[in-house]
Length: 150
Image (tube, rainbow, N blue to C red; front, side, top):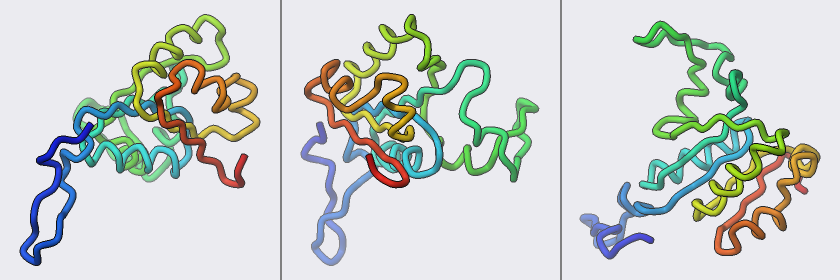
């Protein structure tokens, strides 16, 4: 995980975390909303590699939610989406497709942290409970983020 150089000494002698603190840590983000993507963004800001799963052809619904900004490539993007997903890679997977399960399982095995921000009902519908995810990668930190708990 983080190396010995992940902290620097500040002027007052206290240790401060540097952006490289999570270098080498891999995060897989499943879901949408604000809380989960923001948590993954914070991990990425500290140096983790973050991969976000998005619906094929549609992506995260925040991509098109105003306020929008025009980008150089001519595609408008939601500013909240841009902020929450800065520095992440995106992979399109249909979580309801049984054929996508093998690719998803491979990504879970790749990850050190799996951050799921689906509703508990949707997570169960897709078969993405903590037990299933930990079965694919017993060494991962699996975090389920929902509005009202599981």
